[in-house]
Length: 117
Image 1 (tube, rainbow, N blue to C red):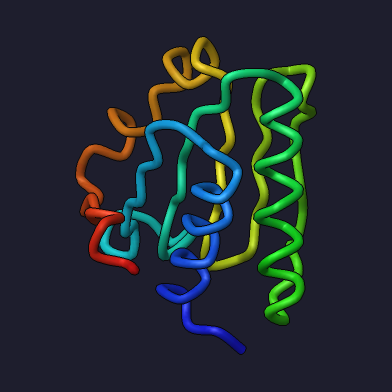
Image 2 (cartoon, rainbow, N blue to C red; image 1 turned 180 degrees about the vertical axis):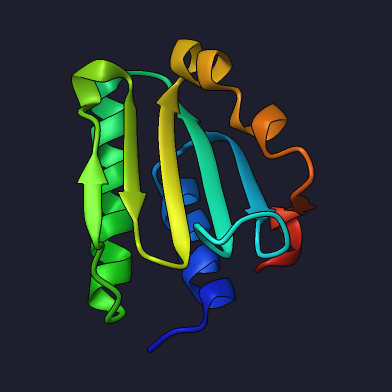
């Protein structure tokens, strides 16, 4: 069983491998009971939404952390994958701007993903 920080790191790495844009990692432990981390990124197309979300799901499942549920469809421009302590959001740009999770969870600690590797 992986620690939440390691799960978040693996999700970020999978997103980077699939050329996700504007990856944001937020530690939400102190602001919600929903999850310890939110990992958010932008995809350039519906095909990339699927590619990124599939890659994150594959990497974490291979590490022994299968998702609890997956919501949204690539055609909707947004996919959420709930791994329990880590929630992954893959958005097309318009959907990301509409939901504006960074503003909604502004009290969460933003973590510099460059420090993860």
